[in-house]
Length: 196
Image (cartoon, rainbow, N blue to C red; front, side, top):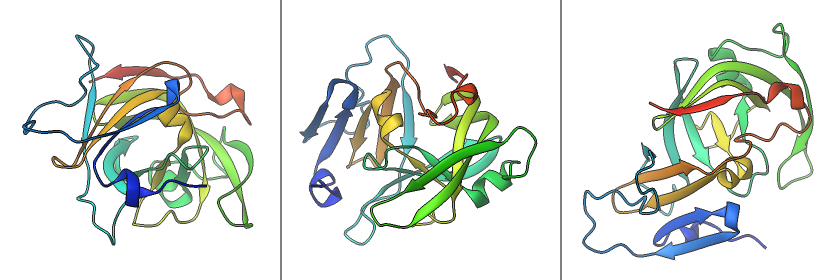
């Protein structure tokens, strides 16, 4: 089965999927406080997200890819993070660009399959977490809700994430491992992560 935003979006949600845990929390008297309570002295990333409603329940924020603004949708139900063809082109890559390789075929919940590609991008900045020399999967035509990129289960497993409903923010820290799973093309994975 699937647990959707009608449950996960009811209160604050912490995703610690590296440890196989999802926590539903209710913050009280925490206005303007950082809710990445586990970070200690370590740096954390913070991203504003669109206010969620019954008609717009998804977690959507903004990031930059090769200096181009993109909308990202957090989706723990998607196995791989994926960029749309349109967003990849705005950031400088198409399926015929030099260095782009086949990424295989992917599918969502339905039976329709999509061809994908893997390209190397100079940098992706997510709420102050900058990932450089990054291999990304791209090829889907449309994500929905105007998003340009799905941040999927691979991103969730490599981060600890807190979704603050009241402040419309997402806090996250890098936990280790591959940020984006490109097992179809392991040569495109090398990247470095820094908080800016």
